[in-house]
Image (cartoon, rainbow, N blue to C red):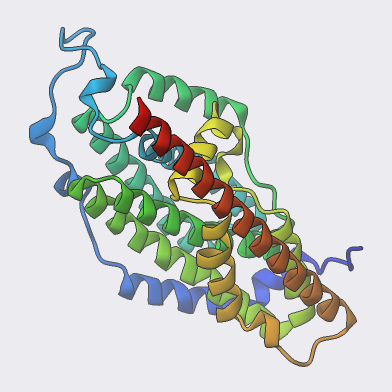
Length: 315
């Protein structure tokens, strides 16, 4: 059951001053950085094609298959930036503080795509032809999240930005490449600041209408899916990423939802009406169910990896 949605203009007007304050705080916290300084250009060489270079072969990549999949998913998500720019502008506005944030965010996210692609090409970490074909196929689908109104957009972005930060950071840590780790740690710093912007907007919105915010958070969390859903081979890559521990149900529960909800004091907020209380109960039930699914996933993964190790020893 959904309660009546407050008009989106209400949130844009009442949160405008907060958005401006958070935008200014973001600009004072963000640190300028340059993608070209994080790419090991000395490893690069010409590919086959007009320049007559060397074709790509899997053995040229020092990155394991699961991390390779994570890098591709992360990059293709960043490549879908035009669609996200449109969605954010449509759910908010391109004027005032909202518009200033939209353009700042877009510029920073585009930097992530440029840095990731340059790293992958220079190190020959992935098949460049397959990567480009996947980019074209993914963008042609037009698959995008469709949050409801400005508040839905803010809630979705708070979850997604934190999930993206965690995914980048874990990918770098598991890559086995210090250069990759350093680059993704730098990108994760940006994503964390983006998350803070949206999280603090949610906090301000909860001071205005906690019931509506909890209802929106409940809908967002229970319906949340990572933005790679429409890309070619996403199911296979997501499974590889989960088995490797880059992003799995345990990570989603422990490193994304619990910290975000704790920061917003969702589970111990007072003064709620019936709609807010019911939403909070559904959120708590969802967390409990996710925690149980995560425990089962971790157990099954450990068993599967043990079987794989025994087979490898016997080979």
